[in-house]
Length: 123
Image 1 (cartoon, rainbow, N blue to C red):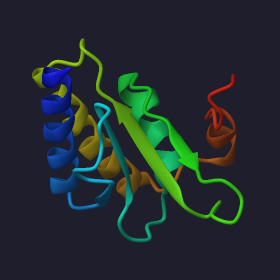
Image 2 (cartoon, rainbow, N blue to C red; image 1 turned 60 degrees about the vertical axis):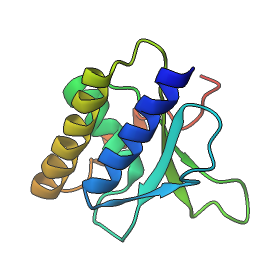
Image 3 (cartoon, one colour; image 1 turned 60 degrees about the horizontal axis):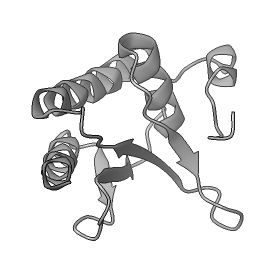
């Protein structure tokens, strides 16, 4: 568990260093996960990033909206499992940065692409 938490802290630091995200609950997590969202408004959103990561690199990094009365708040979550080594943490960080670069060049995903993004963990 200690290695997973160390890798989660490293991933949070790396994601924050991209300069586009804010880490949610930094330092408060007892689980080895990183929750984050875009720090500012962009033409793309967290769901676009999740789609781009899956399409380009095969990562399953879910994007969520919050419950009613906060549904405009979006976030992403990376669960750091035992098999997510430090080198894979670095790869994920690079892939997130590359997904952002792609979205800044091409713009947000299309409506047909967005319909393919799973928005619930129940299916």
